[in-house]
Image 1 (tube, rainbow, N blue to C red):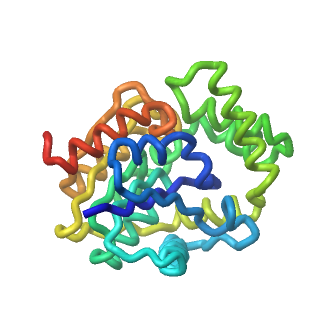
Image 2 (image 1 turned 120 degrees about the vertical axis):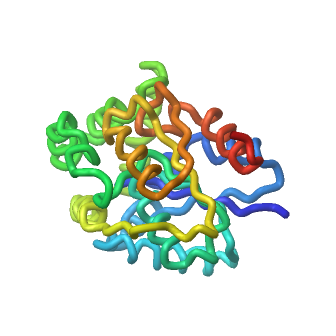
Image 3 (image 1 turned 30 degrees about the vertical axis):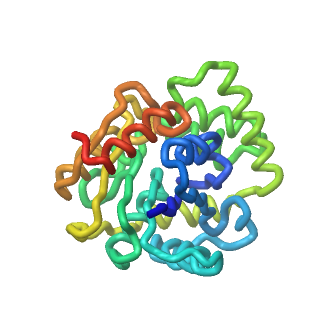
Length: 255
């Protein structure tokens, strides 16, 4: 039976920031449907207010899937803030998720804040992210923090593209702060429903979120984990083919 994949990005990111990954996933799983969603305040929904709680993001994505006529259960791939949303979704509506992969995420239950957002990035996030009006500078700073394996030329090309996205569908400073608040106040469950297979996927060289956060989630919830040793926080941009291959092997039951 064909799957429906739901892709959820992270903080102040939109569906187009997946770049080539939806196509790569579709090639790895021919016949499946791949749906990348925007959370309120981002992308096509940039005019909406971002929820200040993760549960509000879950409500929004469920409503969007229903409006599109898509029915559960879904296979979910979620990065960072998107992974927190997926965790809440799995916990509150386990029958709607067939399987989920959580990429480079973190939760306060298992990791302190200075691991969830590495202190070396605080200044860049504030000055080059929240306070700057220079969109290209902002995207260059984000990519510098989140990618390790793409070339300097590729990074500049992506930064130019992403600055274009920001001009077309700008995320407001208010929505940026609201998303940060939602992430900070998220209370992860003690455990996840055993009926939903969940895989932790981690970048061993993540410079934004300490890789130990994913390891702590895997230990705390008794979940399998797969680690790319060299990729940055934006795992699917750095190593999309590895990510799709890892998902395929996991769903096929390969160790």
